[in-house]
Image (cartoon, rainbow, N blue to C red; front, side, top):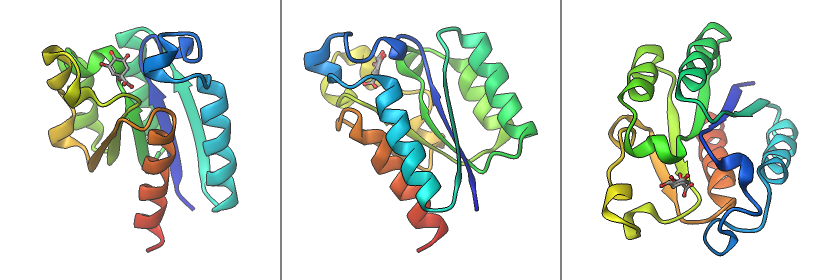
Length: 146
Ligand code: DQA
């Protein structure tokens, strides 16, 4: 049994009504509920959260370490392209993580093609809208139980 945490950055609370042609029509809760069911059916402990503030996300990463979380699925959203503080937090806790994005960030504006996380992630999944999270969860579970 592994403890798996999904961390979501700013504006992802607006999924479903935020530029739906780009980000899709599913809400974050709908996507997370599907992951929760799948992780539970596979015998793993699952939790998720969404925060808009960088400092609160830093605190959540510290808490994940204190709570002995085994894996993180991380969509840092806009902070992907800016946040040394969140990168430092991930480096500090050394919890293996997969970076996910709903959109194909490498094919978007040049500023979105810079990530402060990709080089320290186990892997990166982009471009499958809400399905990106499920693919990350499956990758983690397959790694645990090959
Ligand atoms: C995003 C991509 C980011 O560039 C953007 O700022 C987001 C969402 C994605 O999931 O595609 O908020 O992380």
